[in-house]
Amino acid sequence: MTATRLLAGPPIATGAETLADHRQRLGPRPRATRRGELTATLDRSGLLGRGGAAFPAARKWAAVADRAGGDAVVLVNGAEGEPLSAKDQTLMTARPHLVLDGAELAAEAVGARRIVVYVGGGHANSVRAMQRAVTERDMVAPTQLVIAPTTYVAGEESAAVQFVDGGDARPTGVPPRPFERGVGGRPTLVQNVETLAHVALIARYGDGWYRDVGSGPTRGTALVTVGGDVAHPGVTEIAYGTTVRDLVAVAGGSVDRSSGGAVLLGGYFGGWLRAEEASDQLLDPRSCRDAGSAFGCGVVHVLPLGRCGVIATARILDYMAGQSAAQCGPCVFGLRAIADATARIASVGSARSDDVAHVVRWSGQLAGRGACKHPDGAVALLRSALRTFADEFDRHERFGACVEAGRQGRVA
Image: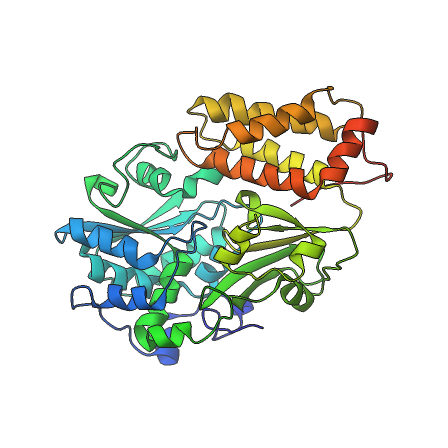
């Protein structure tokens, strides 16, 4: 089921791999000196960005290189604001030099004179590991480490650019985009740390090696954070096309088709699936999207049996409303109204007679109207909840609470 590539090497628990050990294990870093060569290799590999949007990495690189004129910026994105994800933290803490190899290759390939390493302020071990790794090596371009705010939206690429330039870490919804004019007004490649770590290995072993694993529509491997009702939560590396059932079993859990349980795929920007749907679901960006969910940042969270999906969803929506950029009506008013109505539905005896009808209608009206994608992700999760927990929403509406006594819905 697993194909260990990014996490190969010394045990994760031992901490950051040193530069000497990294080079002894993998050899020296290749160079990306011939224009377009590495980008073409990434294109053949089919490598997708691992920040959540699954955008083809090669297209991003080409867009920056075409505008750079030798004066671009590479922004290494390790903000990881998704509460259920730990993959980027794990990678930076254990394999910082793999990430920096990818950053240097990107700088050479797109013509960058500056590298910014952007790490979430709540990830202290990752900050220390990346700081130490930068000082261990002679970087190909001046490199700055920036501590990102501990907010959900701080990892969005335009928010990251604004913060590095001294502004607030809030997304911008209008052009120019970072690849056109980003940090310091320069074309900027914003790339997730896992994406860059894959680049470091593809540059060494080739696109064919990368595509050699995977059984779904997408090839290669991905880091996934498994949590919830499993005995061994944590980060693991899977081949794309692994089923949810097999992954959860390895983590010491079960997705029982007849249990009536549910799984959250993709994190807070993802979607819920019933256990019977999730069991054979392929963990692959395209397959998850076709199923009405999302692979997103690689989260598989099993809702414990007996926990209420309505309560769990209400808590997520409240968090998302509180974590918005608060810069446009759809978030300030629309998302907050949806979160408050869902909270009333989830609470004993608090729902208004029209709350469910309002939530259903609003979830279809809010998407696409925000200054950024934050409200889109929240209502996509809500729509998946309305489908997956339809019976529970009905019970809450009719009886004021779940029928089962003592049900809880904490998602942490």
